[in-house]
Amino acid sequence: LASLFFGGWDIPFWSGDDIRLLPNGRIEGAEPALWKTILTGLIFAYMWVRWTLPRFRYDQLMALGWKFVLPGTLAYVGVMGVAMVVFRLQGIPDGLPFGLALAAVNGVMLAVLIWVIDRGRIVTGASYRARLRARAARVPPARVAG
Image (spheres, rainbow, N blue to C red):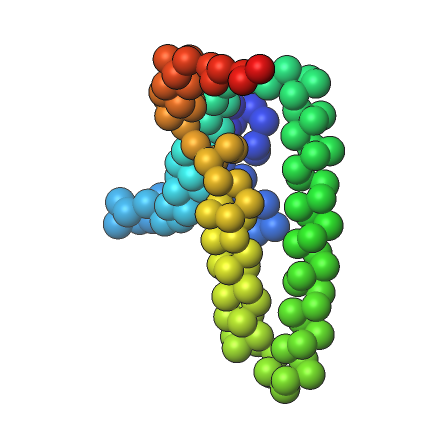
């Protein structure tokens, strides 16, 4: 796959990817072999994730996108825009300090997403959810007083 679809050993936007045999017997230009190894690893990771995770039905995927991903993305863009304006007003210089400040905001938003908003509904494994369903099935329903 790496040879057929990703250009194989040809490193994009770089002209020094020719392998040459030097007179002393050494091989010059091992970068293409490293590049092809990286591409093969990426393909392996893609196939591993694709074959491991369960497939969503189309209606589930659309519901996830409209109810969670779109509002989350809009909130993310808004928070990052406000953070950038605030950091510029505070006088944080561009470059590494500005990037580190934005990375800190990203870390806080990730923690809020995982521990506050999600609460184990999306980011948990299927086995944990199955245990919760089994535990809920064993609890008898509450009686209605009447």
